[in-house]
Image (cartoon, rainbow, N blue to C red):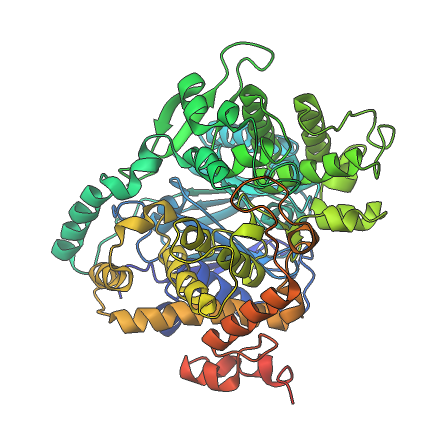
Length: 619
């Protein structure tokens, strides 16, 4: 079967031994690739209850069937999967750029890394040659510095590098894995998993050709989607970028600000995508095989942050700006650059700072405890000081480096009510109090607080439903959206291009057939999508999660939106959440406690995993 490299690389950092195995064709078909394949390989190579930062916790790097091809946005992505140190649940993060394409050309569908090296190393995959090289001189360097040093050491500017920074080395649960210097596999703390293994970087060079199963059909699809991605469905990303969402969300009063103290930011115009592009964006870059060009690089040319450069997205701008009350764009860009330097997830880092500021303003934290940091909402210097402490894990930054859940547990004094997270993962930039379909999607997301597992927020924001009402039917909406997103992340097609798949399952089945040469009906892909989401749930069930973990932050359920406007007083009650959860579990065919049934597993061809749920079924 073409499309797949047909090979999985196993690396044991403890012994230094490597081996390859043939990719099981049935597994590939059932779980497609990317996050689906990666989660299945993680499950098969781990034990229940494994500690996230132990040598026994595998780190899986997985590709999709279109990786390495020239299909627009689909040739360049990769996914990391492990047990998250932040949540204890599925840890999963996708990134794009050129790294994934290079690994596929080296001949691998996945890399499974276990053990812990005696000293810092980087993994050097050069086609069939796999080595562990000394990374001691790279320890404490930023991902960008690491990439430059490795390219110089190997004498090849075109090798591709995914690396951690100081946050990963110091096992911060905010740590991410960065490729191409600014592109992050950003969420769930997987940089700490790399750090726990003394693995500084993964470096790849591949020289193999990737041949689609049906070349003519494949090229027709490439041309067709190239045109689609130059059309209206992707206009936002090609012009202002995702930062366009600042004014949109603010106008709808669904942009959480100052740690959920409000859903509207009075200074939104100052930090808008329009202002960013007019003042600071110097160039827009595309990933390999992408016609959209969505990476907006902002450069600060004057003032106290002169020389700063960072890629800006809505999530990072929101987290460093409105969420902390900061209205200075140059400081926000500098904050994003600091996150890249230390290798921290910008969303979680910004939310953590917002949490600290809320604690400070309520008297839970004092100036003295914070090392004389004046952590008022809106204080740009405090934002930068706290990020610096978190990245180095120095002073009070040591308390904050594991995110808001862990920090609140250490601080106490009622700070738990101010810690905005789900399952241990910090919230993102959509106010769940007034987006009730999104609230359900956040609650059930297998990796914690996350708008990007379903985009259910769009259903609310576009008026397809009453966004202030919890009602039956939302469960099926979330389920269907989750299924589509699971496929996009298993093919590893950029979700910025999701609007170009006009008939999602039909378009994806055409692509799968053209790449692999193995025809698959849309209905079969729909089943695979449900299988992937069920697999994620099974992993979480095995690790001890259930309905009790499908909940929302305290503020979302207890502090109604105070702003005068169309959503004043909006909140999600426990009764509403229970109704939504029952509806979702019913749509999935799971029990009232959110456990997939043996019958559902049999229906999906997952009988081999029934043992996970046998002891979890209600009487």
